[in-house]
Length: 497
Ligand code: GLY
Ligand code: MN
Image (tube, rainbow, N blue to C red; front, side, top):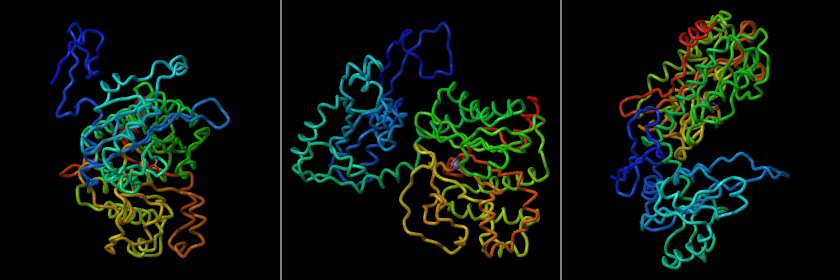
C-alpha cells in the first residue's frame, strides 16, 4: 500500500465528503498487481484467460476508433466498444490492447502524438498518464504495436493462439500465427453477465442519478405541458450529476404514445392525456441503468381515471410478485409466465378478458396482446446486456410456447441459465393498449377472449410500464432502483403542486 501526500492538487477519491481545513491525502492501494481504486481490468483479463482454459496465448482487442459522420468533418458521438472497456476500463477513442496470458501482462496502446489533435482537442493521454489512471501493466503508443505483435509471434513459435472478437479485428503482423475469432466473445459474454463489486457499484450509481432525475420530473410535472420538457429536465439532471450519456434514448410517452414501446419523438403536447410513461436511465462510467415510471400528468397527483388506476395496479402487482421471487436458481422465464398469469387474472376481473378460465386464457397467449414484451433483460455495459449464449432450450414444459415471443431476450428466453448471484436484471412488466397489437388480435382465434368494447374505454390509458434494476444476491435480491414509484410518486407530485 502506498500513500502519497497530495496537498491541494490531488482530490480525495471520496468526493461526496468534504473535510475542510484538513490536509488531503490520496491513497492508492495495490493488491498483487491489481489496483483497487481503478476499473478492475486486470482481473477481468485473468478471468477471461481462465475461462478460455489456456495458459498461453494473446488476447487482442481494438477500441472504438474516431468515426466521422458521412460527408462531414464532424465525429459521430464516441461510444467505446464494450468488450474493449471490459478489459481496459479505457473510455477513449483509437486505443488497442493486448493481454499476454502466460506472462499475465496487460498492455494498452494509445493513439500516437498528433500536433493537430493536441491543438484542437488538447493533450491526449501519455503512456505515463495511462499507467497511473488504468489497471494495466504497460502503456505504449500504437506505433510500436506491429513490431511487438511480430516479436510475440516469433517467441511463441506459432504454437499459441491470438484471440480476437471478430476476424475483421485482427492485429497487424500476425505472420501466420493462429488467430481464433470464435472463442473469445462467448467467454466474455458469460463473464459479463455476472457483475463484480466494482460493476455493481457503477450500476448502483447510475440508478441513483436516474432516481434523482425521475424525482425532479415528478416535482415539476404539474407545471409542464409537453413531453419535450420531461426529456429536457431528465437529461439536465443526469448531466449535472456527472452522467451526460443516457443508457438509451429517453422515452417520454404521454397518453396513447405509451403504447409504442420505444417511442422517442418526445415532442407532443399533453393536452388532456392521462398518464406519461417515462422510461429513462442514466449511464455512469459506461454502465447502464434502466428505469421506467408511469404517473399522472395532472398537477394534483391523482389518478385521472378509474381505468388508469386499474391498469397501474395490475402492472404494480405483476412487478411486485415477480421481484419478490428473485433469488439464485430461479428461472427468470418462469417469472415471465407468472407476470402473464397475473395479467390474465386481473384483466379477467376488469372485464377486458372473457370467455375462459385463467388456464385456458394463459395457454391461448391472449395476454401477449397486452403485455407485449419480455419481463426484462440483463443490464450492465449495455442496457440490454450480454450473457452466456443460450444452450439449447431445456424447456421443461411449464412455459406455454404461446407466451414466448421470439424477440424475448435472455434471461427471459426459455433456454437462459437460472439466475445467479451477481446478475443484474430488469423487471419491467407492462400492459399496453396498442392499436396495432389489438388489430392483429382481432384476426386471430384469441379474439374470442377479448372484450373489445371494454378495451375501447381503456385506449386513452395508452400503456403502463414499471421497471426496476434488480441485483441477484446469494440469498435473494436487492433493488438498485431508487426512483419513486406508485403512491410515493403521486405524493411527490401532489406536494410539489
Ligand atoms: N428501457 C428500454 C428497454 O428495455 O428496451
Ligand atoms: Mn428495460
